[in-house]
Image (cartoon, rainbow, N blue to C red; front, side):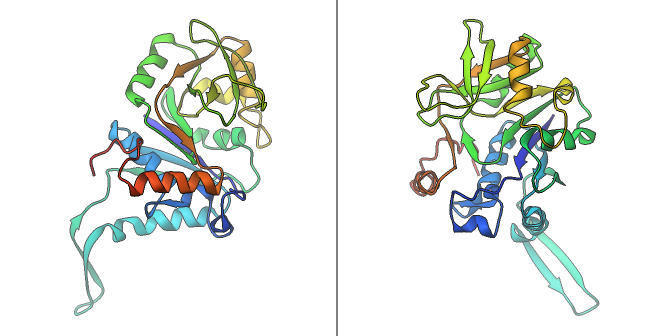
Length: 259
């Protein structure tokens, strides 16, 4: 099953780094937060990724192009031509497709643009700026059990994203934009989607969190997987510093992999 990562945003609020690289490439512990998210999925056996790039998308492509060299032991032999010998390979078993989904394309439009790369009935999707310790295998099982078009991971947090009105059956009865006075569960990403989702996205100007999710909720096709563990987005410098401190102390809850 493929994992779609939204990694095309500007990230202008987080730090001066975002002038030179996309927000998902800003590092925690010396590695981009995008890498951390991919490691989470990989720990559950999901190793095929589609990255929806946009702002400075070449930075993402160049990073992955160099990743193999940077994580392997290499001999460059120039004595007879130009040969490269790989002694030890330390890269993950990943297949990564980086797609330029446009500079100003909205979140829904980015998903629509990678439709040709989705060959299965189901795929997973999350944002490239938030880490979580959700059990992805259980999330997927929950999605398959209810048979609806979309499942999102819901968490209780002070900072507000998309607001969810969740019923006793875990069905999302409504979806709307944040309000500072709300205390409802929020959309944490880490979604499982059926290919039918593409029919809910009109084009590049479609904001996924508005019309598509709102319509899915109204039609009873949006379910929530309640997560009571750790989740944190990286919208500000303060949040970046917090994640960096957790990693430095070797107490990052999202680090569920062994190496």
